[in-house]
Length: 100
Image (cartoon, rainbow, N blue to C red; front, side, top):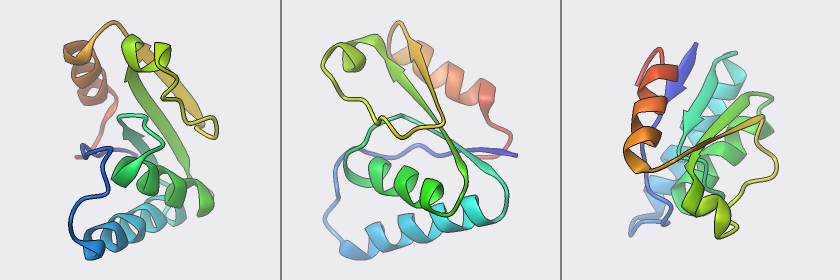
């Protein structure tokens, strides 16, 4: 099952949030599910993808071309989908997800 998660590329103000994101990522990876997310290697997005991959799961990033052009790539992703813009990014994440 593809689980789409929307979250920020910043670390947030509460360290407990990062811990919760990492626990979610471990569960996604260990349970045989796959992550679909915004594609960043930074902040909460990066922590989530990193924990999914470390647990043996798949992580698909969906990034707009502008972020790719600026070098915001996470090289370890299972798959990277590049969109024209932010609305197309959100639509693609919705299309790919089985659960949110």
